Length: 141
Image: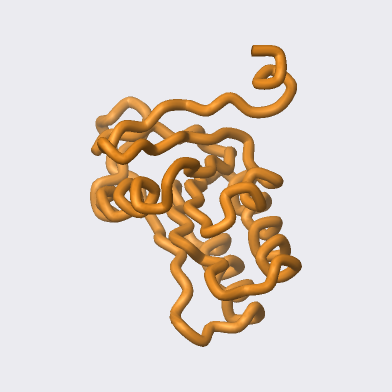
């Protein structure tokens, strides 16, 4: 699956849960490429284990911020958490992106993830992806 993500941005997957899961599972952590497609880049996938608490998940975000990954895939990282904890973790992704990474988020609550998003992609059950407008421009259309 080819997918271009803007560096410095948090992009949220929207659409049916099964379609979003399909996109995330189709992305190969070992095949990240730069924008020109000529050089490989490091990809890191953030996923919580059953029983991970908020502190452990925040530590995982801090750890990935200290690594040299260019692409960070956030795969259902807030599952099982209450809304305030979910928002806290999602907000912690903003500095990861602004430090020069492309961050793609699939969250059980994509509306909460939109609060930190710069952009969105809508996944459809047939496997397609389309940019989803956000912000004031989306309201005007």
